[in-house]
Length: 494
Image (cartoon, rainbow, N blue to C red; front, side, top):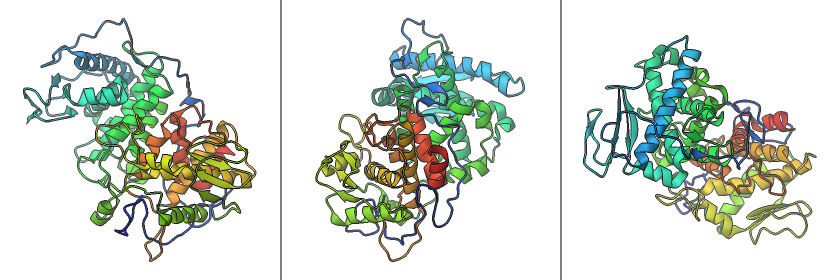
């Protein structure tokens, strides 16, 4: 979140307060526009119907012979073996799905596969030198897929695991599929980049559903932590905050890219092919921002020790849930409840109707990760919105209690994620004025995605801190709240 006041580099903006989120049973103010929804019935224990079982394997299968594909400039090392095995399975997937889903059209493998080291001896690919080219890409010019085995793939493998490498290559092969399908995939020379990129994310999701269905020769993926790490990869490879989706080369922010991946995972390649400019424009959240807004919002960090920040957060939550009689106090001297269950770093204490915050621990979440750190891992933070959302989730439990909703169990966790998403949308709907209030900043929703996928996040947890098992479902529930508001939360999770 962001600040126009240059004295405070925090997640706030100075605008008028207009309540658009009301009580659990209905919305006040103007309706929330947007067509994006959850990608199916949301089950807390599954990812689009596949049960979450973290005891299931996730990663390269052991004892399976490596694939044999012709790869130019390969060094035979671990990263090239991983990439080659991934592409062999992706070939097999499209060999099955393309004729089945697209009028019998046969899949043709790409004409050229190439590996390189961006810090080693350079070669020429797609008309450019690979020197310092930390990338993986599809090139329609010569129908090739190439990857940087020296920097990019090891970095992905270290931070998110080997399946993140598979995800990136599945995305690039998604572009090769578009090239082959053409009009069947709503693709032409005039198609904006963002549509092509969202489709490629979607096609990658379809491939991972095939892996989750135990059809892959070389890989396994479980629907819990394994899939969560793949989804978290989207946070790492997202567009820079503030880049408009209309710009040439735009891929989308993680919030949008995760939706596309989930759509493919849940519904398959034909869903991806239906993505077009109208759909993308209707659901892409990150619109073009003024340069001043981007400058004031990037690299800003929340300082929860500032009274002004705490005051603005409290006002934001109170205004967002203005249709309820529940207005709990927020304290910052620890997350312990005198009675009831404590859920550090933030707790809802029902007897005193208090949100108890361990300011130091929440501040750690608010600190953005440094370069090369995986968000939320080994002490790395995520960002200011992630910290605010943790507090908002506990605040929503007070609202639910007032409305008579159960506070324990998976349904409560889904409802909590949904209402937190509704609050997030509220912070993005104000009009400029002279008042002071919190407002969603560029990249904030990506922080929500990253935090939702953490193993200890409270955003999709009940009053006892029990998190719903499926990270896939956590993101879906949050998205329902963001686009449908509290009415959507009531109708889906009452």
